[in-house]
Image: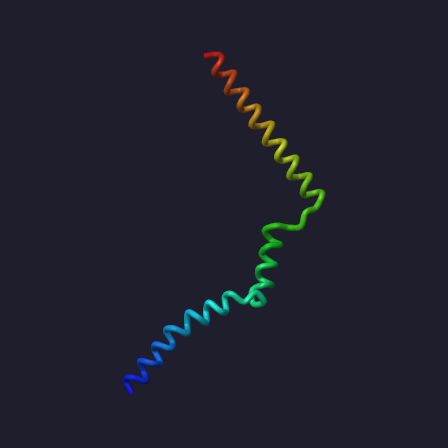
Length: 78
């Protein structure tokens, strides 16, 4: 009885990680989940969204430029 139990435990110890690895690497199993998450994180490009992003980048560039000019003017006064 002891040898059979040990063989069963060893088979379980070996087969469990192999089974989990096999399941986790099945593309069909996770395809829907991955595509849904990808669309949440990276929505399709739209002209309106692209324009908003460009406007935001321009505002940040102007703000940084103004901060830099202010810092230079403060240093030149000292």
